[in-house]
Length: 502
Image 1 (cartoon, helix red, strand yellow):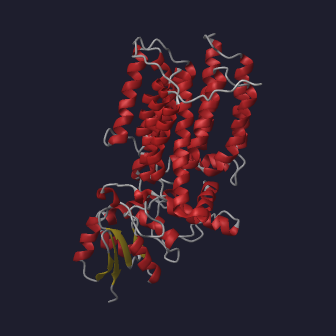
Image 2 (image 1 turned 180 degrees about the horizontal axis):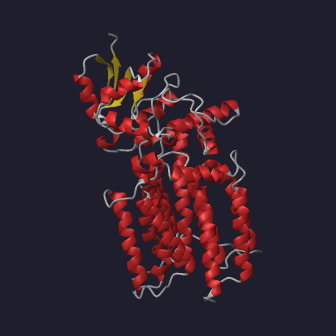
Image 3 (image 1 turned 90 degrees about the horizontal axis):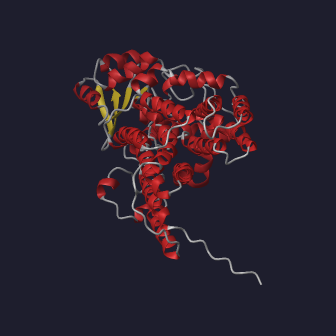
């Protein structure tokens, strides 16, 4: 008779990162969806889904020729977004976003635990990485990059630590075929491979303890080359690299869009980013652990990237988390100890922490006793609710759908929602930043700031305006004082003005 196998209950030690992870997931689930990035991607996904072809031109803006070329590099990510929307509406897409975030951080947290030998040591790095990424949680194709990045990082880390056989590296080129078609952040997969190849080559050259053999380093180099070749499996071929470089150096994006600019220590997420740098430096200074060349390349390289743009902070957090956890392990400090018992009560606690996270999903979120200050930020009782930001021009778009026409000047984020909800109404501008000339973006900013607004509107032939009364208050004041303009629609935030015929 076989002996009964005892159940391996979770340890209370797991509670430390679990609290961080579940609390972060609760926050992620409640982030309202702004109008900016998601909706135009969803429309492109719908077109691909319905026609089987990837668009190649402007399509939606009247201010540029319809045949103006535009490359939809995230075509597969857009198709997946629409597929989810088609299956279960906006709620399904938001749940997928939440899953991508939590999945990525769970993978890297497990790696931090492996490096430190303790879930408690992984909890602080996990908290820092999660909280510094709070500015990067918008629902958009970037969400498809979170898990591939985490998998690359963990796969390569375990390989150089001798925990995986070389054949595991072949997952990198296979995964890249997916990654290169869902989002431009695929380039970071090549950066990770390059950093590990160069770093491990340096370790081998100086005969550092734990260095891989030249044969194993050769595997890294070979897989890096094979992965680079696999990036060609996309509709644009080698041109995808030029597309990413062009996007990263696009003047309107770099100078006018906040997330492409360097983070300042203002706001919670950016403050945590700066605090994390101080914590990492202090721990490395006092820890007996010394960074390997690979870790130094990763930390310095991704820190430089994060300093160059807020949208890159999320990647620095993932890279730094396991390194910080490993350094914490070798601090000359005697931490309080306790017996990490394993029992069913621990499992009950972990499951109890999941309950708020589950209830925060869009299907059940309205059952939560959230403060009215939160509900004032989101639409309720609409088909795509309840987590749609009130910054979305739902009412104004419905009005334009019923009364289309005119050469419409619109707030940028509103343009994204119009592309989805009222495609019969062409837009002046929208978040496809690299599509529009730099001078047009400057004119857009001037108009919104009330600088020569009427002159510029006339120059473009605009006879209708959809504005955000909070973001474009100066333009609103100009129109209120102007002769020949009349407000035809207004709600709490959006207003539509029409130019009267003389």
